[in-house]
Amino acid sequence: MTADLVEKTDRYERMLADALAEAETVAPADTPLGQAAAECREMAESYLRDGRHFRADDDPVNALASYSYGYGWLDAGVRFGFFEVPSETDLFTT
Image (tube, rainbow, N blue to C red; front, top):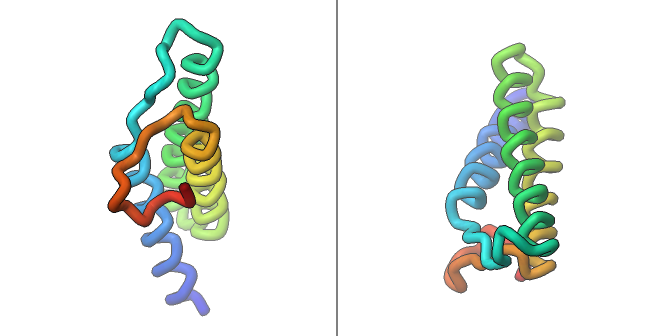
């Protein structure tokens, strides 16, 4: 079980980091949608940092939860149209 948790935590960290790198904000920054996009990205980035902090503290359960929440924020931003992602990616549920 522990090996599965480690592998899944590694995978979710990579997925979130890759997703953040691929998501391009399309809403103008000075609009309410742009502000919402910035907040979504900030939440995703914060959860990525939190997850890395938990991993450094040897807490893979909370690290995995953080990566999952961060990914959820970013994926929701894609669904709302805040971000544009490449059509050939399988990182998002567009």
